[in-house]
Image (cartoon, rainbow, N blue to C red):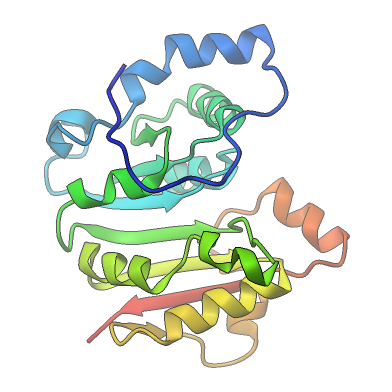
Length: 229
């Protein structure tokens, strides 16, 4: 198992319900080969299928992995890193990888902030932050993933012309994500009309969570920012 450096305090969940035997087997059998290693060159980790010039994208907090697997399946020429410390979500993503025969995903099973310093400057074509934990209470605002310091890091990692893609169905998180991204000089909001943030962009996979949110009258908002300036 790859050793993980120490870093900032993490507040999210790492474990949920006990995993069934089959899901636990996926962690044992598949995860070691698919675990992202910040100490190894990217080309060596993804193999030669896409070549060293393949685009690289990152999803921060992939949850159950349905969205990330859909992206990877629809974009086989792009390599993806998925960061998620929640064991149950990791097992779910591994199931998607196995069923869809995906070879372009590597998994970081810990706090994403631990690997960001190792990623290449201007090396990411896209970063996805989809339905992050909203931490709605004001006293917990510092726990939200998108902070001004994170925006500075993303501005360094996303190449000019690349994109930061975010979504939430929580009112507090919607305002926080939008205001934090809009306040950064190197990101430009692409929306030109209400439909641009009210409707799911066609290139983003639909998931069961999204459908569940809409059924419960929690309408998601979608924010796409270009890396500009």
